[in-house]
Image (cartoon, rainbow, N blue to C red):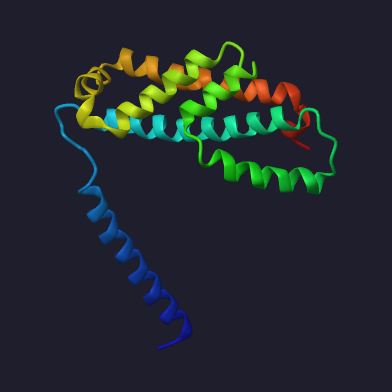
Length: 171
C-alpha cells in the first residue's frame, strides 16, 4: 500500500468515525416535531451562536473598562487580557450584563442583551419552554428573534468599535 493510499484509508476511517459519533450525539438532540421543526432548529443554532459571540464581545467590553485608565505596553495588555479571560470564564452571561450595566458601559443595551440570554435559555432547555418554541414556528415570531439577535450584536460591536476604531480597520 502506498503512502497516499494509507492517508486516504486513514481519512476514510476518520470520516466514518465522525459520522458514527454524530449519529450518537444527534440522539441527544431534542427534535420533538411538536415544537422543534427544521426552521426552529436553525433558529436555535443562530440563537446559540449569537449568544456566544455577544458573550465574547462583553468580555472585550469588560476589558475595555478595566484598562481604560491604564498605561501599559502591548504585551502587558495581552497578558492582562489572558488573566481577564480566566475571570470572565467564571462569570455567566447574566452577571456580565449586570456588571457592565453597573459601570455604565452598555448604555441602552441591558434589555436587548437580557432578551438574547432569555432566548438562549429557552433553546438550551426546550422541554421547559415548549410553548415558546412552538410559537417560533410562525415566521413573524422567528423574525422577531432574528432581529433581536442582530440588533443586540450590532449595537454591542458598534459600541466597542466606537472606542477602538483601529480594531476594525481593514488594510
